[in-house]
Image (cartoon, rainbow over all chains, first blue to last red):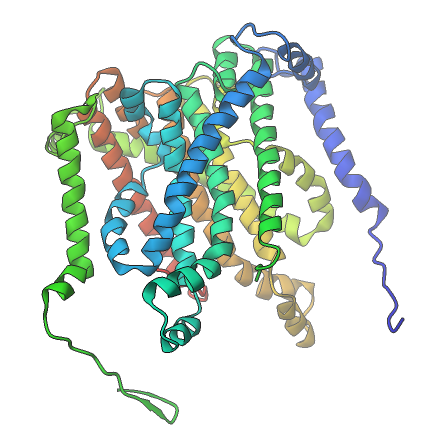
Length: 264
Length: 279
C-alpha cells in the first residue's frame, strides 16, 4: 500500500447529540401535555398519536375510512396528476427549448399561467369538476407541470453549443440534433424536475383535499379539526410527512439507477 | 466591430429577403398568434358553456375587475384586499426569514449546533406547510395569527435549507486561499462564507416568497374575511365565475410583480452572482 488510510474520528459528543436531540424533542412534547401546560384540546401527546394510529388501522370512525384507505386515495390522486404533468410538461419543455416556433406559441400562455399558485385554481375547479378525483388531479397537474416545463426547457438550452455546431458541420438535421444531442444532454435537468414536481404535487394535494374531499390524508386532517380531535390532526400531518418522505426516497433511488451512466 | 485583445471580430448581420415564411417564424408574431388564440378559445368555451356556467368570458372578467376597483367587496376595496394579503405575507415572511437564515448559517458553521437541530428539522421538513393549517386553527383560532403562523412555517424550511446548503457547498479552494493569505476563522466566515453563500440565501428567500403566496391563499381559502383568496372563495360561494377569475387575475399580477421586485433587488444586492441565462 502506497498510502495509509486516515480515519477521522467523530467526537463521541457529535454522535450522541442527534439521538439526544430527538429524544429531548419527543420527551418535551410528551411532558408539556402530561403536565397540562398545553391542554389536550390543542395538541395531542406522542403516546395519544400512537394509540390513535393503532386504532385507525382497523376503525373507520369517526371520519369514515381506515387509515390506509385515506393514504391510498391520496397516493392515487397525487400520482395520476404527477404522471400527467410529466407526460405533458417534459415533452413541451423540450420542444420549447429547441424549436423557436414551439416556444413562440407556448411561451406567452405558460407565462400567464405560471405566476398563479395552483391553490388559486381550487374554487374554479370545484365549479368545473365537483369534489371528485378529477378536480384534484387537475390541480395537482397544474402544480407539477411548471417545474417540468422550466427544467426541461433549461436543460435543452444548456446543451453545449460546440456540440451543436459540430453536429451541424457533419450535416445533422434539426430533428437529429434535437433527439440525439439535446434530449440526452437535458436528462439530468429533467430528472431534477421529477423530484421538484413531486414535492409540489404532494403539497398541492394536501391543499386540494383540505378544501374539497371525502377521503384522503388532507381530509383526515380537516376532519380532525372539525371534530376538535388534535390527535387525528397530528396523525394526519405525520402520515402526510411520512408518505411524502418515503416517495421522495423511492424517486431518488430510481433516479440514481437510471442516471448511473450519464451523471455529469 | 468588437476588439478583444489583438483579435478583431467583425459582426456580420445577415439580411435575408422579406418573405412570408420569415414573418410566420418571427417570435413576436407567434406570441401574438398564441395570445389571440388563447383568448379566443377561452371566449368560445365560455360562450358555448362547455364547462357548465362556471367560466366567465374575458370581457365579463374585465368588467368585474373594473367594478372591483370602484365598489368595495365585503367592506374592502380591491386594494384593501391586496394589502390584507400582502400584509400577512410580509409579517410571516419577515419572521420566518429572520429566524431561519441565521439558524441555517449557524448549523452550517458549527457542527454541534448542527447535531442538535438537524434531526428535529429533518422530522418537520417533509410536512407540507399547508398540512399545518388545521393545527394552526386549533392553536390560534381563525384570526390573523394562524395565517401568519402558516406563512412562517412555509418560509422557514426553504430559507433554512438554502442558507445551510449555501455555506456547505462553498468550494474548499476559497477557504484555502484565505488561509494562505493568513486569515483566521473570523476572516473565513466574513470574507468567504457570507459572500459565497449570499446568492443561495437569496434564492432561498425567492423560493420562500412564492411558498408564502401559496400559504396565504390556502389559509384565506380555509377561513378569512379579507384577502385575495377570500375574493375567489366568495366568487365560489356566490356562484359568480367572473369574481373567481378576476381574483385569479389579480393574484397572478401581484405575484408576478413581487417576483419582479425580488429579482431586481437581487441584481442590486449581489452583482457577483453568475447565473445561467436561459431565456
